[in-house]
Image (cartoon, rainbow, N blue to C red):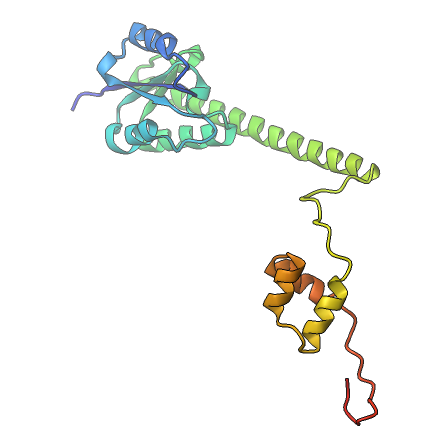
Length: 213
């Protein structure tokens, strides 16, 4: 079977136009009928057209052409993984905005292309790791700065009735059922038990009738 060439184009929304990518792909020599288009976010790779292209169409020896690297994904970790998978599949990836990926080498110099792809994958991996570290550092700095300003994180606490201790104590004494207390206080089951467990221990003093309470 002859080696085939396919193109992939992606825009994030239906309102965006893919004509610029299609023009570049067809000008490079990709048959229009061989171009798969997705109109979906690039936050991950779970896109219908792209997954169909990978799993059902591309075969060993084929070439995949894209206009820009972020057409695969906007996540550098995903891009690195996808390039590695294409390499394992034996699919050549050509990125029009990265000229070094477009050069064709004779069989005896195939190692040069392998080297270029390996460098590209490693560089992307380093960039991705650096970006993750920067994000974590900014998050830590933001949290520390917020703590100094006494900023509380998470959903604000719902104010509780002043009589919540009395209501929960009545449950302990058997005067109310838990579901009745939850309804009266207007709180969730998890909130109820969290508050219930915060109540002080039940007094064990002996009453005048000789019973413990």
